[in-house]
Every structure is written in structure tokens, then in C-alpha cells.
Image (tube, rainbow, N blue to C red; front, side, top):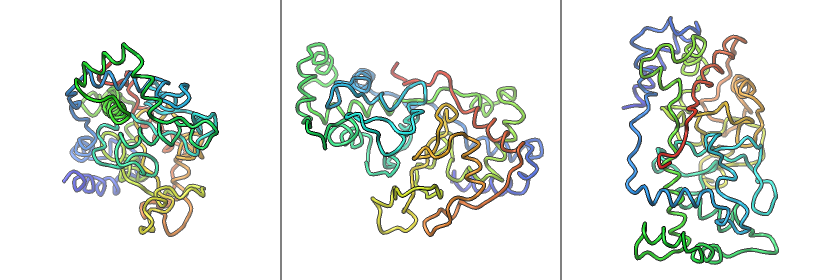
Length: 338
């Protein structure tokens, strides 16, 4: 029903959005649209001590093969648990193939697969893969490290053992338990309340006139809303938006769906202005570059999303859209457990 209401609101805005002025949208329709972006009550945390254990592991380089790389090495809290690097360095000091996705708000993604290509079914799977064979491992080098050796580091840490036994009495300390704790922490990465949230809640002074016009454009003429939907500004789905790349993305995993070739996960736009460059391959240096890419419609190929259609904005409309995107940052974005 939520998406039916969104579609109805978008139909209304499609008619009036070319005027690029929030005041021209009937108050009722604008209010209905804003409601679709209202943030929910924060999810409860069942076991705060378990989450705290996961937080310690998330920031611990001892969880990597080399002992030098932490989950936080590619997911910085001050950047919405993302990065500004076009590509992060893996545990062996080599550049990874894609820019790290932001984790902020990922606890609301439900059963959606994790990562740019969705190859991990859950956050636990993603953490396990990263540690065992991915960016936090030394697999493929002359000095691979087994996960058992990583676990032994924590078994030999008396303070950590005491915390583990208190949180998980009687449980065996193994890699499965450690990644479960990391994932529990990641699910608490709550976006801070942003100016946009305060506007949706009724504070008309929380964002500027240009930002309000940008919100209308976002959901109308610029057609961002269908993929960047809801309060997290993502549909948690995969789309080929026509970027210049040889990386087949989701197409490597789902080979029987032609629309998945070159398709990548829709990233959240929460705190987006903090994390240039943009796209999975960091091919857009600025938010304006991103907007201009969408205006052109991307590379025309069979897999390109049918939602990608060319349009044209004025310079003022681009600035209004950027003004809106700049309202999505909650300065105090932290994990609930902290």
C-alpha cells in the first residue's frame, strides 16, 4: 500500500513539478508525499551488551588477517559509515574494485541482500566473507591467515573473553559468533535526525525554500523517488543506471535476468553530501555530476533500467535539488548503542 500511495503522489507531482516550486503543489498532496518519507520510531535493541561487543569488534583491527584492518577502515561513522575514497585498500594494501557502500540505516533493509551486487544474503554473510576471503583477509597472498587464528587472538584476550562469556554464556567463541555480533552492531547504525526529518515533522523553517523546491523535483521531474524511496532514500534493489563500466554487478550473481547485468544496489542518500565521489565506481565527482548523469539517461543498453529516461534541468533546478540533498545529513549519526 505504501508504494501505491507513493505512485499516486508521484502522478500528482509529475503534473506540477515542472513549475519547480513547492508552493505550487497542493498542500494535501505535498503533505501526503512528505508522509512517505517520515522516519519511523528507532528499532528497539534487545541486547545492548551484545551490540556493544559487536561495536568493539567493528572497530578492532584484530578481526582482520593482518591485524591492521578493521570494518571501520572502510566505513567511517562521520561519513554515514561510508568513505570518500574512490576505492578503499584491502588488508594486503591493494585497492579494492569498488567504493565502499555506506552502512547507515542498514538495519532497516530487512531481508534485502547486502552489497553493491548483493552477493551476501545477510550482514553476517558479508562480514564472514570479508574476513575469510575478502577485503579483511590475506587470501591470494603468500601469507593467508585462517579464521581460527583470528579467533585465537580474541580467545587470548582475557578482557574480551570475560565480555563474551557475560553476553553469550556457554556459547563457543568462533568466527560465527563474532560476525553475528558485528552484524548486530551494524543493524543499530541509526541515521541522526536531519533537517529534512524536522521539516517532515512540521518545522517549516528546518529547510530552505530551494530545498523544498528540490524535494518536489526529486519526486517529480528528476524522477529520483522510485529508486531512492522512503525515509532511507533507497529501495534496497538493483538497477543498471547506465554508468561507464565493465563491472557486471548483480549480473554476476543473477545471470538469468537481463536487467541485472550492470545493475548495482541503490545506495542510501542519508548524509550523501559527505561522501563524494559517487557511484559504485566513483565515476561522479560531485552531486552535480550525478544529476547531470541522470539527465542524460546513462548508457543506452538492454539492461538499462526502464526508469532511466533523459530529462533536462535548469541551473537553478540543479542547485535546488542539491540543496534538498544537503538536508539529509543528521550531524549526530551514531549507533544507538553508543
